[in-house]
Length: 368
Image (cartoon, rainbow, N blue to C red; front, side):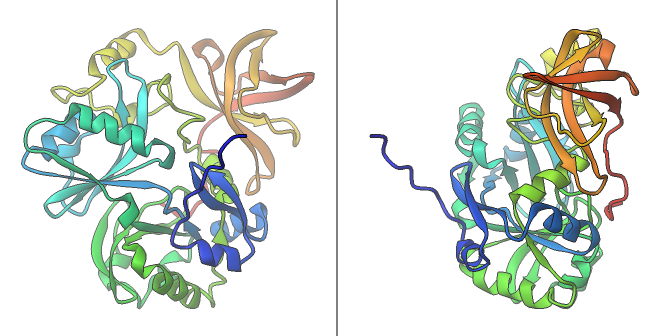
């Protein structure tokens, strides 16, 4: 008999239970996949405001005199360009060019904060420790960090009066440390939905105060709690990648369309040699958006065919509530990647006609 694995719980677990959320195992955490329904929650974020518990994400603190140079070598993007109060999105690559993880880097006063995917916390920490040298200190502060995402066109209105006024004027990928319902928090204008919004980092001891404060402040805006199901459809409509589905150790940033995050002019970073070579010869495959004919959804790992020949595999797929059509992302050969190319996704005896379209699929979001 296999031993039972004990799932971790975020500090907001009691609220999820009280709201009747369906809870599932996600990256070792007991997380809400939905409360009232994926489509209803999805539309709440697109038209109003939604609240996500994303405390399963991992956070590392990196500090010391060598922290900036160390991180700049560990990631493909340019950490040296960050001013205090700025964040950036970046892959972390292996020497082969494969992606260890895609993370956020925040430049705080005297240190950096890294936000990593929940499934990669142990792997990422080991990878950083393996390459650490000089005056660099790395701490896993995940257990000391609660994280809520407030997303949607009415997000700023919900926070008004409960955070410093300057926080409401932050540009995208900017943040500040300030008061949130009277407690200290990192207030970051970031998100994973394509809508305006904020990600709020604070100590778990304040979880009840912040959740209840947001519920009360959001009542007139019809604030909706949102689960992982709608989080996935929202990110897919934007063509945002999910580690483990769309990117992993076997994919490169150039294949994934993340070339804008790879700063080849940097003196050195892990994976640079391999990525320079790949750029010179051109990736053999590329991640594309697919739009299906009809409502059948191309699912993960479905074979993609062009004129009877397999040219790739689906990485993610869903029925997009905002678009009322089935969409997917897939790696396909360069020859089959041109916009408008007609393809088929094959799963068993099912064949779904699709065509290559531009990402993001959804372009009407409130984030500008």
